[in-house]
Image 1 (cartoon, one colour):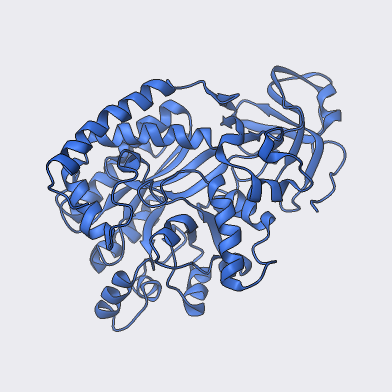
Image 2 (cartoon, rainbow, N blue to C red):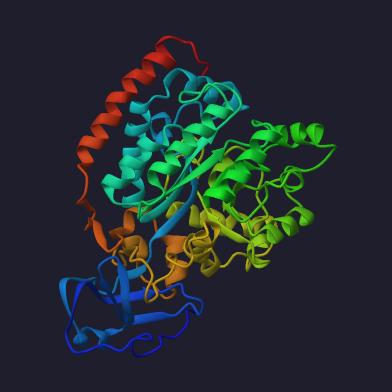
Length: 461
């Protein structure tokens, strides 16, 4: 069962009827703090963009809120964090889902034909919309024209870590890796002071970049104090290429040997790793993005994510791109993460729900090195909060809220989404963007995709 609520307000002295911006009342509050504190009939108080107080219903008499959300017993919890995706690829969703060696035979040729600033903007708008409606408040993205993604994030009001891709062959926004690095530097300089957007480097993978490029990016990231996102230990193709390049080393060993495994790195997938690799990951203090649904759909394997979590690695959940896992819903990852790890470990008690929820909140915040500001509902942290419906038929009854979230909930159960203290979605209605316009523009773009992929026959199905 979940921990008993701690009565009273949390570590804060207040004067009577202090004015605040937003108060959430009558909530089942899952704080996801270190003690996994839960408040029945709980209250969360927000001023500006931060959490001012968290506690039981006695808090209400101390504050006068400009806006009050009475959630009628629904679950209130930290906003979900998607640690790895390629958001703009929403416009390619459901293409060639079962093509072998899909990345090289299908996705790279498709992108060569269709990636543009317009495509990136349209896809990002659609993906942002999907994530907000599914309770994702922060995401980490790797793609091209990330300055266009940044504009869409800014408009909808989300939080994001956005990595400009660097790869050794010509792509839509760079002729080579050096141009990609310069594009990334320009992007980093433009957004380094943004309150909700963290610009980053995103070398595609070790085998699609040279050692010199990876070392240059590692050095620049430390100088600029920005993250580096990379696909790492994901495939046998990568494993074989790096072993040939680096005298039999694993991708993780190789990254360590060239000085590119450090605290700024976020490695996506991390499927083909052993205990020695995990020890190097721990020593480096890097983050890991665990993308269960995409990995099992591609038949690449199951990351030893539970072992990494239990050993204190910074690890959170991700969806991968919407051509890989097909959705950007972290809630819809929960069920698969819990069940597949049970199966892999032949242990029904493995990966209990509370660990899954931790990996979607504080674990993910740690993976992005943002745990001081997001990932839990604690005084002083940024007010990124979601409210999950407990009255929907699939959510009744609730004896254990963690179990209900992992085994019963779906993304459509999210009622309200709050980022930086602002309500982006209320009762499933978007408040910051025009949902219909975003959807219609994405549908319009599918005509271009169909003409390129299906009618022309230039790209295999």
